[in-house]
Image (cartoon, rainbow, N blue to C red; front, side):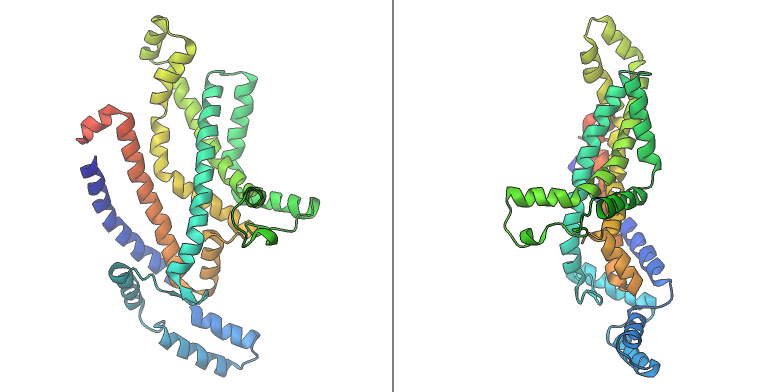
Length: 336
């Protein structure tokens, strides 16, 4: 297993390199950079003339290397990451990019992990429930929920919830993790409850999409598995219905869901990002949008690289889980 893990990690390095090149090129493709943002701010808010603002913008561009060719900027950025662990300097946040990532990424990953746990437990459970009661009203209800979860855009659900909270329920604390009285307070049960009150819409919306997918896949695969010959043999041996389902059918029906873990973390991150943008939570989503809007290229590129890395890590974890679940995979792959 250790050899398998090392091989997968080694094969991921060229993929990350190619992704970094493509990501950096795409981000740099639109015209303009952070110096242009400075020029517009000086003209619109500082009252400077175009010539004065442009002179300061050009000086800023030379000082921070924004006047160099894109290839040189990329080499400097990737070289700093490889040699010093330096992801560059955020011009908009006026701090190292590593600090910006360190502030926002743990919150995002924590929310995505909570969403993934809820989506997996509820989705698999509802999928088993629906499959074992095929064509009943429970199956129809859960299938309808699954359809809505996979078709309704998450940003639309977020907008609806924001409208209900702000305009119907007069909730004013939108866009933060805590109420003012809990901002710098030590952890307590009251602070945890306050956190739940602020983040439940993001968790609910991101969970809903993953739950719907898990439920749909689990139901379909379990129905196929229940008709397999080895399941009929288990029934013929006198095993109870619950034992047949849980001991024989469910483990084999889980294989596609295990492989789905390779993309579930980026999927949950995407769901969190979409809803966090609507709710303006200080997580990865608003940081990506804000940095792209002002041309803070190193923040955007670093966050996109982090999301790409989560996809690669997720696929490695999925392969390892599948190997642990199915001995045939270990034998075919030479994993011990």
